[in-house]
Image (tube, rainbow, N blue to C red; front, side, top):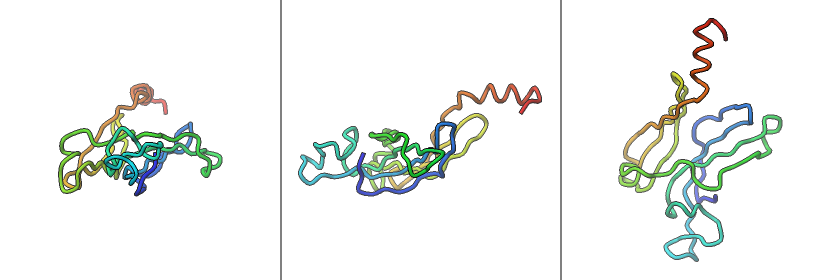
Length: 137
């Protein structure tokens, strides 16, 4: 999806599939569309124009200038009330990513007013923990 502002988010993560790069973006406003909505696919139609959200791009491990896959809609966007209202409405601005005790923790700013954390469990964590407890690496 297109944006008016693009900014890096947490550091990239190397995965077996490639280099995962998360980025922040401000959903594009189209002057020709009603209420700024773009009608030719220039922005993410699932969120209002001007909304700060996040996308992902997967780059090749062998040649990081090559895009393997990218999202065409926001994967992380304002949904909670504290993300929609504040000093600047409709903002989720991703800042940090940490792996801790089998979970990914994604730290982000909300509506320029608060800091929040989203958690995702790693489905492979239990298998790794079980192997480590048995003395295997």
